[in-house]
Image 1: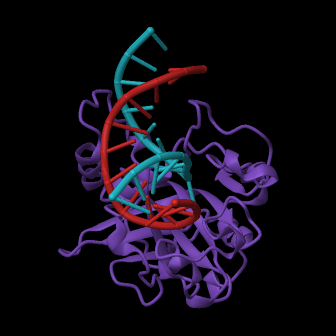
Image 2: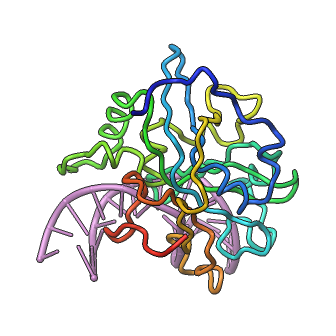
Length: 225
DNA sequence: ATGACGATTTACT
DNA sequence: GTAAATCGTCATA
């Protein structure tokens, strides 16, 4: 079913990234994250899971309390800027900066349904897997997590601060489909247990029933949308 | 200079 | 279910 590039595909404009993080997190579902390699090869996937990080007041965000460091500087940039960070000594995560410039809000892209360049994504994932990894790598798991999708798409720190609008080889396309309200699950965010009441705020969104959504603790996301 | 800690993934019991 | 892997970043000194 996923065919290649649609003729109608259109890159998102600056203004479409300027909304608040929660709105953008929902709006990005169904959009396509695209990377174009040097030789013109396209790697892309439909966004099926996102999380909103609201900025200064959000204790789960890297920008909590207005924290501004070399690492999270990109969060303070123009809407449509890529914020990529390195964590756990081995993983990268990709965010889209949103809101007004100077206000540190972003949307973490947590999972994709691969569309183009699936073979390359698989190679990238296998190469990035820890030494000793033996289990089969299922297609459905190529991009089913924030670090997995970065590995598959080849997104690393060199993309941090990149403008997705003027875009080099990384941008977001309108794919011509977005889930309706009944097709979206809204849950608490993953991996932010340290953030007090912000840990349970419903700021994660998934395309309901998508097999490409991340499975935390081995389970599919529960709860209604 | 040093120590603690991840917006995770994987393997193993 | 638990635990290991692995290192840049930040706060403290």
